[in-house]
Amino acid sequence: MANVFWLSRISRHVLASSKRISTQKAFNDYGICCNRYAQRCLSSVRSEVVKDEFYVDRLSGDHQGIAVFTFNRPKAKNALGKQACEQIRYAVEDVRHDKSVRVVILRSAVPKIFCAGADLKERLQMPPEEVGPFVSGLRAMLTGIAALPMPTIAALDGAALGGGLEIALACDFRLAASDVKLGLVETRLAIIPGAGGTQRLTRIVGIAQAKRLIFSAKIFNGEEAGKIGLVEEVVEQTTEGDAAYHAALAFAEQILPQGPLAVRMAKAAINTGIETEIATGLALEEAYYAQVIPTKDRMEGLKAFAEKRKPVYTGN
Image (cartoon, rainbow, N blue to C red; front, side, top):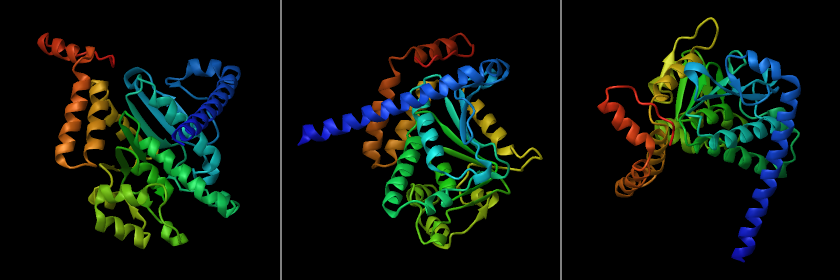
């Protein structure tokens, strides 16, 4: 029975991989035909062809090493439908294995909206037997974001409600404009946050605050989010409407010069250790520390310190 179980899992993985490869080829072929010249003119190197609902930019110059995930579904207020979720899953898997990506920023190209949560119009047409699997897939997608090895930053320049806020909760950091609207509002629809919201919000703001916000379906602004520790930085919105994004870029700039492997190991040590008691956490820290000892970057850091120069880390 065990062999059958693992063969089944391997088969599903191969089929999923084949689907992703096919999707990637379609996107790349389209990009070669339509965007070759445009790509040369961009100040950032775009890893995906611009799509209707979601795209990824790999920045260059002083921001090289930053990948920006952008939601771009204005008519639906960036609601999470099947197509958008599929594109997000592909992007997450793509950057997960890219050692050149040191920070991921999630933002919106739609003014005053980060993400309105689930696509309720699509959900209304969904048979009841499909709802559970779809929500499970959404939960797994956000777990994938949370499990990315590099730091992730949600730039909240617009409303993040329901599943939209759950996306932000899956990130390591949340930076918000003071006037944005935030909330886990699912109980208004007689459901609960189903993509990790009940668990991640509780771990960030505490049990009582999480219950208060979820039970009441309260919508609150960036200022209150800062006071309860839901966001790490609150900024005044600009006329361009992208203050949180620029704050996220500034924060990412502080991470970029550090040893990328060290940052990844530190994130892994914190994320795994916090789920255990202190003794196990310390053992995990020791194990992750051991992984940076034989690296070229560690030796580069020591040499740069001795030579009184800035280190040049390569991620090796």
